[in-house]
Amino acid sequence: MFLDFMSEVEGLLKSALDRCGFAPEEGINSLGLDLTPHADLASSVAFRLAPVLKKSPAAIAGEIHQAIPHEFRYVEKVELAGPYLNFFMNRAFLNAVLNQALADNAWTGRMNEKVIVEHTSANPDGPLHVGHIRNSVIGDTLVRILRRAGCSVDAQYYVNDMGRQEAMVVVGCDHFHLDSIKADHAIARVYIAANKEMESNPAIREEADRVIQLYEAGDPDVTAKVQSAVRYAIGGIEQTLQRMNISHDSYHWESEFVRDGSVAEIVERLEKTGLVAWDEGSLQLDLNDYGFEKKMVLKRANGTSLYITRDLAYHRWKSANSDRSVDILGADHKLVSGQLRVALGLLGVREPEVVIFEFVSLPTGSMSTRKGKFISADELLDEVEKQAMEEVRARRPDESPEFLKDVARQVASGAVRYDVVKVSADKATTFDWKQALDFEKLSAPFIQYSHARACSILRKSEQIEKFQADLLVSDYEVALIKKIAQFDLIIDRAARELKPHHLATYARELAESFNLFYRYSPVLDASSELRDARLALARAARNALRTTLETLGISALETM
RNA sequence: GGACCCGUGGCUUAGCCAGGAUAUAGCACCGGGCUUCUAACCCGGGGGUCGCGGGUUCGAAUCCCGCCGGGUCCGCCA
Image 1 (cartoon, rainbow, N blue to C red):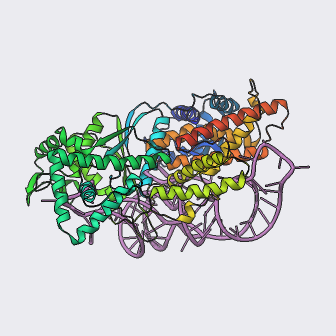
Image 2: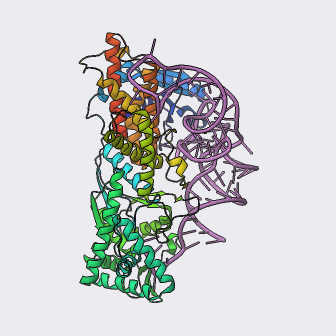
Image 3: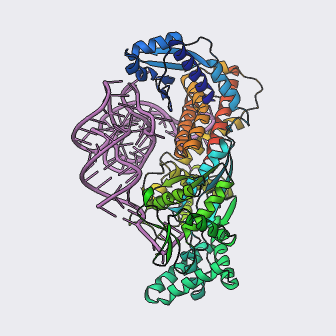
């Protein structure tokens, strides 16, 4: 809804500038629009015009102000505040927001692109750890945001089945017994054991090399072994993701692109660029002209393909099957993804939009699956659930064990997701148990709780038919309506910029606005007309909170 | 050594890409609020050289340059 108000303001400003004969420089936000505490929307366009017009910003703003048309739909008034132009929403807008927020179909945007989002794609050599889930949570939240914005999204997991690490898993399975624990954890044990064994036994490395070669050659026995190991590990990973409300729509195995010949075709096409040469037995692509010192190896000396080559084929496929493709990658992939994009450019393939997130490390240093140095996502979820259980039990001692368990589970999964998504992706973080288990701070439970409060009010009331939105005039009521209105703006921005943490911030602000309304505007005890109007607002806020939580992948609990 | 990211109250953090009107929240700390729709809440208070130094600009947390500190990468690994 905010976007409608903003369009109107843009129109007003443009026509005023036209009348004055002013033309601000083209570009993003050329009208200098900004959210501000001073108004519902402000423009500082006068500052931009001042150097060209050789007049004071205040004088220019005055002229523009005079020229603004007086026919408003959602604008109440335009105030001149020195060099600033302040735009305010009118009652009709607030009422329209409220009415729209009461409809179920009002929460999806108008984007309609087909988007492929690749996220998680962790190697099937062990369980997800607290670093991987940053990828999963950012990825899944973006999937939800893009869908909310109106896009049709395919969430994909790219399965690295051909790499050295998977060969090591197969070797590990040959040498060691798979424990009867959760599949991905069992795989990690043999993988770690095989790596350890390799330190003293070089034959292990040769075995892995042989697995790589035989798998690429399509040897039936090795293929069966690899596929069963991969499926086993992925099964466990899926279970973990499910605990966080995350799932993928499709899986693509890198071997697909070798088997169908597209990897070979990509190499052939790159050879025609004249930038490819054999060097010390391997086939290499020289990207020096594009700012990359390191050559990109396309084929090993023994003829087998490499991750990057297979990834080129996968990306070509993704580009051909979507309007936008988005990759979620850890900071360690920055350089390679840069090379990948250049190589795709050479092939005339649309490049992916890459979301890079910085590392999650442990207080003792960085994590490593191979060395067995990590905190698994399962372990984190178990601990957070335990903590959540205590919190629920203390608050709802009379509820059934099933209720407590269910709430604890949803609070825990939400808490983990929110903790991850609230921090901007380009901030490196250090995992901290104390912080992860702290529910006192502002986090998912805070937002879930606001939603539960709204639900509680609605449970105790009857469905209202009519209400007078005009009665909602207190500061807190108006502020809440305005915050609800911002939903479309936030989704639009997050979907364009691929920054899910904007939505996390919004969720917190929305919950805060609701809590103030809850505190200062009694609903059920209000007298008739006011009660109905407040009930409508409570319902609208409930819808906004629910939709926001769902888009964050956090359960919108109705009671907790 | 080169490339990229980060540096905002004691701790965590928004704002930075598209420069504008008193710099955002939380935690911790101090003080207040439950016979009232769930107190996982709300209110008040103290606490900030926006890493440092230059520059651009009417105006810089935001843009540019240099430096310092931290992270990541620079494999015929993924």
